[in-house]
Amino acid sequence: MCGISGFLGWGGQPADEQIARRMTATLRHRGPDDEGYYVDGPVALGHRRLRVIAPESGRQPLSNEDGSVWAILNGEIYNWTSAKPVSNISTACSPSRCGTREARFFSSRGIAWARNRSIMPSSATAWCSGLS
Image (cartoon, rainbow, N blue to C red; front, side, top):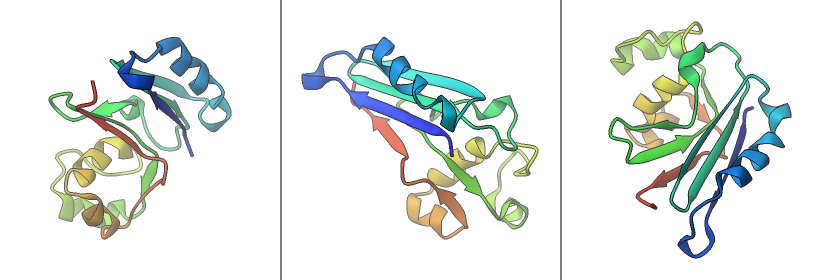
């Protein structure tokens, strides 16, 4: 499992990026392969990545197309071979590709939809939308 951190500035105060970086650094043992941050207004997210099968395209935090929703997550698509024809994803959903990009597609259809398609998100998924 990757390392996930985040916090909201007290009373709407701007989040301190250095605090987010220090928090996330303590999780290096959970994800030694990469790190990423999102800091905007009172919101700070941090991610330590454990790269299992994914190339560079799996960097986090990730966002929707217009940048209004940011997320850090950890999960695995277990049935990628059978999900591929159902999902209509433009990129192949295979072990040589990153599950994060596909997770955007699946999560955009709602958590219940994702759970019914053998996607196993972690319980430590953090979403921030319109907070800053």
